[in-house]
Length: 152
Image (cartoon, rainbow, N blue to C red; front, side):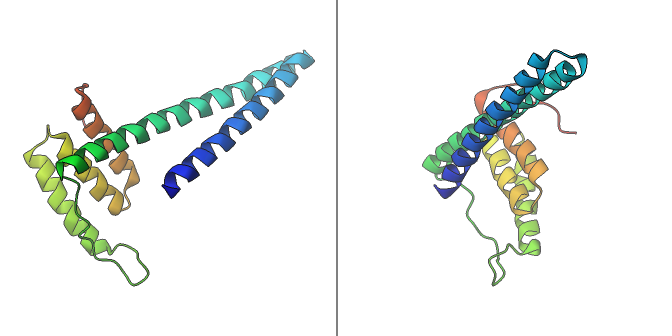
């Protein structure tokens, strides 16, 4: 719950920032000189890119949470079997061992979104967020019956 509140607060701050930046871009365009119009257009592009990124991230998070709820209802969420240091950090060797198991499961069932979901969690635990996101995107696509892009 704390993560959701933080996400929504940061999203709201970003939206306010987008509005402020957008208003500055409009002011620059209203100056009417070629240089300020060019800067104004460039400044107006930034809020659109940011809003698009915020939207895509929100859709991704909602989809991943939807899959997590479904997997939890089935009793298939991965069990936290990771060894932790006294400070609470995940032991690297433990994360690697769980990752190897999840990768083997995914190789056995490459069309099962559940195995890709669990692999995404293992990637995340191993601190490989780029691959974790890709694996979760694949799980979402498989679950929703969308075309799956080749891994590369």
